[in-house]
Length: 394
Image (cartoon, rainbow, N blue to C red; front, side, top):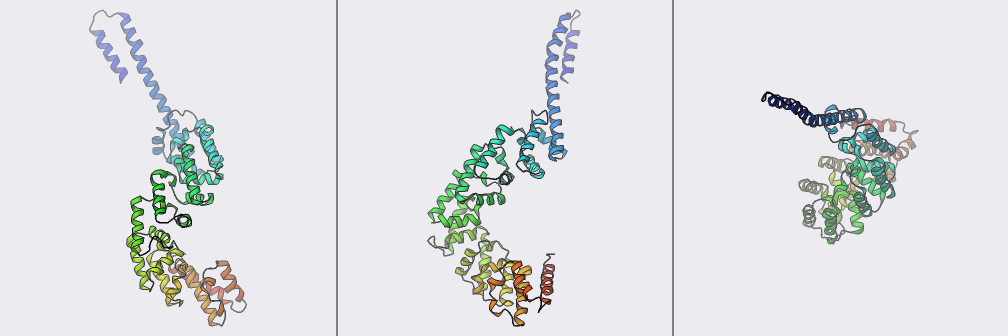
């Protein structure tokens, strides 16, 4: 269009005089068309780059055409496969599979602009110096993809902080396998103030380690939310000096206040005191996260059919976290069958037959009696299948 405009202007200029000078036209085309041609050539080059990278993303990173076209605009300057291929090859050398690479490039297409030797290699060596294996690094980058583009001089101090706080590399690996973006929280602005607040409440050392072991993201919540949580614990009558203060904090953290109130009311309907509830949460920190329906059904079965006292269950809350259909019912009925035949009277301790592994349970309570009671094995399989079918767990 610009070329046509310039040409039109030239025609008008030429028609305005009867005797145009030959060098006027030469001068006009010598200057203006050159600028237009350069612009057009640049635009064409950019278009070729976009088309090339769009196709590359489709072929090598499993993008669809629309997303590839959009992402290619972020990858200016790449004119051959050499640059992006070097990044993909580097990632795969550390154990990134195709799916991991795809997710990473989809999240941050610009990672293909990174220099594998000058940028990625030093970053990954820094992670290895912290004690991470290649597979650990894969999990770290997958769960926190920003680490691929943030300078390791910024990332490494945060990793060291969390590693020191959690107490081990293994605990840190577990954290970043299960929690996304934990490295995105500001240590200075969010984590440190929360730690100070907890220390003011006497939550430090082993108490803090207890919370972090079960709910590491506890200290990433807003300061006002943490203060409200502390107030709720105190409203339950648990003072900061109590040995159960940190456990109650942990229990309240995983549930909404409304659900927690319903949870307390449900347990109190089975004659648990507030102290029983708090003690149960201390022994089973994940207990409040279970659904009210599941907890109530387990409680009713253990009291009404298995014959356990409510106070007995309060001291063994892990029973409430077990599958009713797959474990509690089948195992109880197998032991009831043996009792009716005069066996295992002294071995009927819940810790023995409910908490042992599946292999040990079968060995001790079915295989041992297979010659005398061959029907036990069939009964056990039938119970598990029937209960699984009834609950939709086939």
